Image (cartoon, rainbow, N blue to C red; front, side):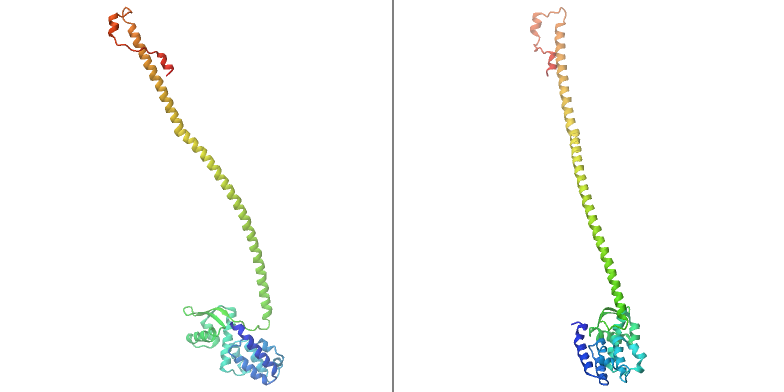
Length: 295
């Protein structure tokens, strides 16, 4: 159970005790309350009418004692020891514990030198033993002892009673925090709207890019087909045309050679061959040069 939750029953007990006593009998209640090992809050006891009636009486020092334990420190006691009852060891220990809580309210890193001065501790070993055994084990603080840096790093500290006038400061602090939170919320909402708008812009841009990519793909596909046509198809037809033309020329040349052979036969002297000569010559099938037109 948390230290601040455990105190509820102790506070209730001492409030009932203070309400049931008057005058000098309240002195024992005050000493018992300030010596209790698990009680660290005293404002409820101070609010009891019977306790407030001690003001201005011979027992008013016990009212001052309760106020010291509610708001003061060990240094405050040393400064006013002549006007306060002498403290017993349990009260001294309690006041030093409360002093650590007061120091932890405003500083989360407590140097050893300051702690030893405020607690009247002679050396580091004694200080660390006090912080471990009387503060951290009790549950009023949690933290880390840094021997290298000679400091106590506070992670948690139980709260003390509010000092007179401190409530107004707390209200102002909370008001400032609320204003800052509201401004932060507005800023976050604006950032969310901006992110949403940028998301729409990104979607639109992405769509445009995808459309452009498709256009490029189609363009490249057309260009590739043209390149294939120019690279393979046109040369093939050119080669086929060349071969066809070459074939026609060859046939024409062959027909021309045959025709010339016929001319040589019929251009011999006399214009007519002898019968015997004609019989002795090998026969060739006549070819017309006109073949070149139908090849």
